[in-house]
Image (cartoon, rainbow, N blue to C red; front, top):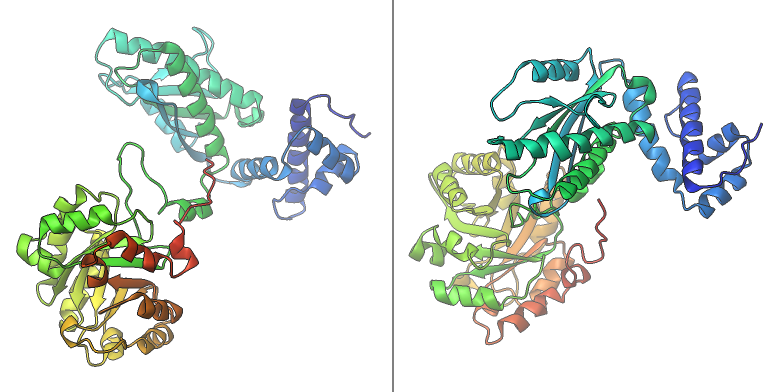
Length: 479
């Protein structure tokens, strides 16, 4: 018998959820992929596919989004032969009442059940776990314990945990069951361990409840859908800014870039130059060798005062004691460090290894290296960036060895690295280098000695469409 047309959006969602789960079970029994379809769902409902499309359009329901969440939950719950162990996290709200939830949900006879029992039976001062209850004598199912993250020091703080936070978590778990986020047939098999953050200065009980309810519900949904998918992590990891940290850690993941070489050995003049540089995701700063020789690597931290979010490179031109020099630059918050390609192979190997160990970029400058391809072939680990460089003292004409770009790409096609070009770069040679495949254009005097620094920088930023636009200019943030 075909189902009747639903009267409300909620009725339609309930019908779809039931039908999608039945379709998934059917597909699993036949050994098919766990991927629900509109046609299959419509068939289970006993209606034509076009009719179902009309209902979804009328009630503004997105089938793909609903099906994806249910399929992920179904796969996590139904397909797994091991005890269910799912993890969820969510940050919701603002101010002192902001809520941050970390939770585990899974089988009583698995790791989550062990953590649940351990939490209830092992008390610690200021972090006493408690059962979540909607009201006294009414816990939700699955049974849930609330673990305070912040040390509870007095009864006033305890009241916030044992009151609005406890009730919010319990209500969110109960509603998650009602809404199908948590399967109803698992409520006696599963338990939840929920860590709750309540700031000591939080005072508005309604906001504490409101934010913790939303955070718990969101964390549960994320846990059951195995959020985040790897694709999202890879997309956002170099875009994200942690709200409490207060600054962004830039990475070189979307070339091309304009690298401005700050070689003038004057701190005040350098700061003045930085203040005149237009803000752009495509700009990185090189703390030049003359500047470092005069002030030491500590100058990097001095420049951070006015450029805290900018990618900074310490141009040490390392030739010896590479591990020590990488460590020094790292301790002064450099994002990258430069070694001379003239260094011994063992020195370069230690240089690249130490930079990668610490999580900063290893640049190797090929200036004066007679056979750069052969030199690079001898390295154990490939550097993150290779610099094709012509020295200032021998600059003539506009030739900067750009033919080496294609040779590097061809020879090391199995390596992941960026190519930078340097040495008397002007907009015309920069355009040629970018066309030949350069990822980074290193410019010094054309910008730093300009009477109009902003104009000179913009000349380079106009060379390609990508450089004209910030990386996420057209991105709409959704979580």
